Length: 252
Image 1 (cartoon, rainbow, N blue to C red):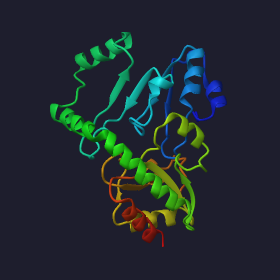
Image 2: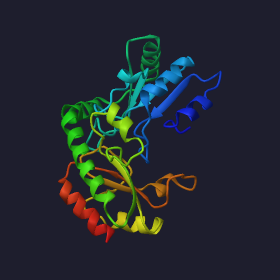
Image 3: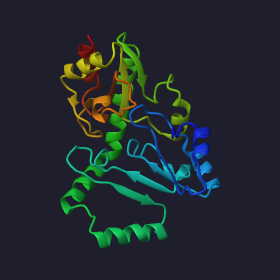
């Protein structure tokens, strides 16, 4: 279900639906879900609303917009250095659901190692500053790509041309460090751009201090719905002008 399409969300609900789940901005096209509107639809139907906020920690506050649960892959921005695996479920209160998942974790032993916890706590100390820098750099890169003659389309909610820009501006303090763009010339041209970068690393993770680039359709495999000419960028903390210069030379 395209969660940015409210009519589709309403249509998808069934009498036995127990949970509505949304990721915003979405992967890899950065569609924006109106969290307040989807929360109302879910709650009117008696459904729990869950928001995956991995791409927008601190920049977006799903509880304030009606979410019942928040998910994060702490592998990404919380860790921030591409050196730890983890995830969290956040509840508003220590309610019955909290007690159930805490008991399951305790009895099943599904806990991160002490060192992994230390790495995530280390990353959280700089998270506010990193998110500002990621967002600043991504905005500059998106502006550059939007004007490049060899770029067909840029997907970044900070651009006023993005169909979800107004909603994103309303529910986010900044627009995050992730973006994707479509290269003119098809899949082969996109692959050549990815191979031609020197600062960007070709990898499929995100949210670290290093900038990453990936050809999304190749990662997703034969059943992909991503455009063949789409490249996804995780913008790191390098100098934005250096990142722009790298993309410019790769696009030539």
